[in-house]
Length: 289
Image (cartoon, rainbow, N blue to C red; front, top):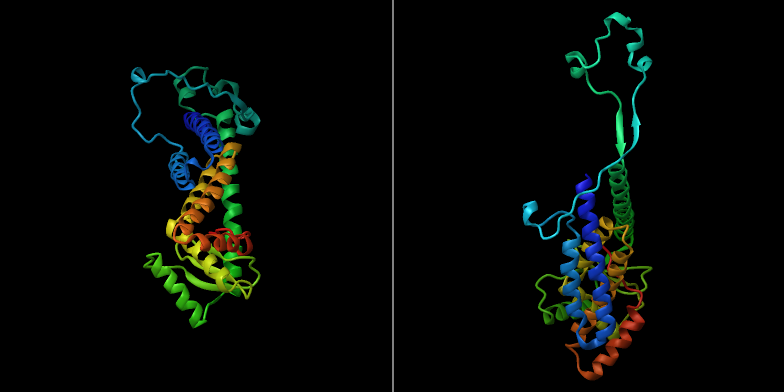
């Protein structure tokens, strides 16, 4: 357990340093390299942070370039039952074997000890379960709300335009198009059975076309899978504030990369309309799982 905590600490410290370096490079270089490439770098880093165990076989200690000894795991609490609690207080003195005899060595150990490593491991596990549990409950509430209020789009004109846009993007499979009251903007939902959710009667015309292009581009890029991976990384490294900064950077860069990809299919005039559509119709949109 102590060895696992040491590896987790080394991983989160190394990951934190990489996050700071990437954030600094993004600030210094600005638009000199695209958000698409930053998303690939975030993906590789997230994949490594998601697995807090060695990915390669352990090298012999003599071959390691840096020798590191795991700290001692101190006992912070020890409980030993009294003679009265174990029932030994009733035993006549003559029947008690002398200390150090074979009978004493064969007797089962009484009581228990609690080490610092066990406490830290329990805290880490509780924090990770809390992050996953909170997001899991939010997801279940959203799915219940969607099952109750969502309904399939029935407009033949809208379905034709949606399918034509999917064909233009080369999507053999595409999310189910669903109308949901109460939404502020179109959004993509679901990892395995994806649905593209539209607000009821709030987006139409060119704004709707560009909003659909934006969300279908998210679907084609599989951005929602990267965000799901980041949720797991945040659960594993919940104690590291730099990982939460990384999650915000991933959210921002996936949106920018999606806009870059979608705008690449448009003319100069259409790009201005696309930008206005995203600001007006999808500013509040978020990928939900």
